[in-house]
Image 1 (cartoon, one colour):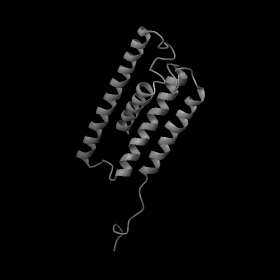
Image 2: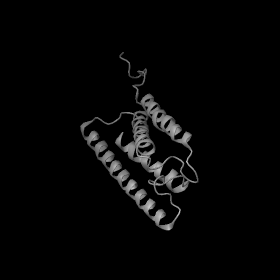
Image 3: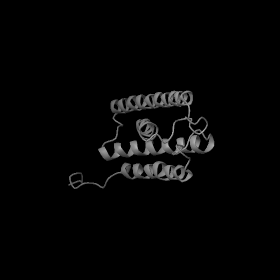
Image 4: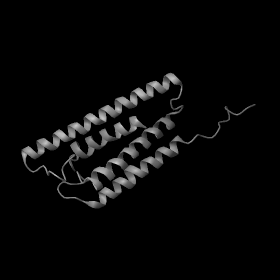
Length: 149
């Protein structure tokens, strides 16, 4: 789940911050309308990506440690489910804290804030990904080859 949270944060930063340029980490409190404001937002985005790198590295070491103990996911869907659940949990926490409580940025700050996107982000990108991940983590039905003879 931790690896999924880190990769989800990277996806958010790459897609919404860099490619779509809908927001930066602090764009609701310091709109990037000047070169200095753009520079400061880019620096905050860099710190965000550094934190996501730490999450990913932590997730990789947790996965490695689980492999040594024999507690890693047994199937690809279970692994994907754990990663989706972590991504959704990250989105839910980041969305509530950054978008609603601290008002640092919103899903779409630039050119204008569109509040409905913040709620869709929580619903689809948070709860929706967590539910999809949970469904994939469910134990699968016993296959005919696994049944006792």
